[in-house]
Length: 123
Image 1 (spheres, helix red, strand yellow):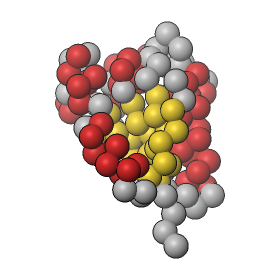
Image 2 (tube, one colour):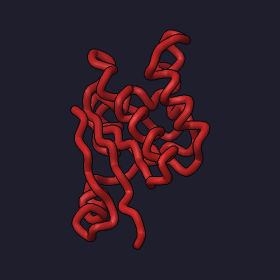
Image 3 (spheres, rainbow, N blue to C red):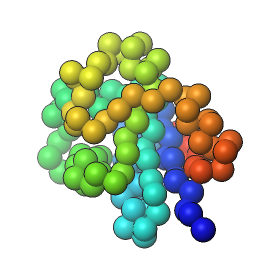
Image 4 (spheres, rainbow, N blue to C red):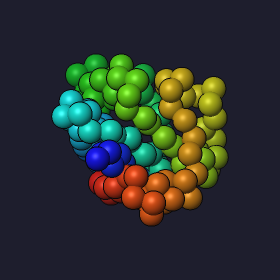
């Protein structure tokens, strides 16, 4: 039996970083338990993927800690909504990590519909 990938979906941006913190923490925990995981950033949450935004996080920030742990774990994907990224003028050159990738919502929904992924909305 293959395990479903858990997609931790977050849309809240810098005004409420706790949602993104949870998404990265949950993905890290899922991976530690041997579960496939992905962090999905959409809406204002795509801003966390911008190098400049990440650099502005305090060094003791829980978001920075969990994001760094995910960036150090190649098995955990981080995907961004291309429509949200375009709205916030975020291109591949702006991304904090080269493994972060753009992925259309239609592909995420197809994975869920086909049963290979579970969608977990965190706000």
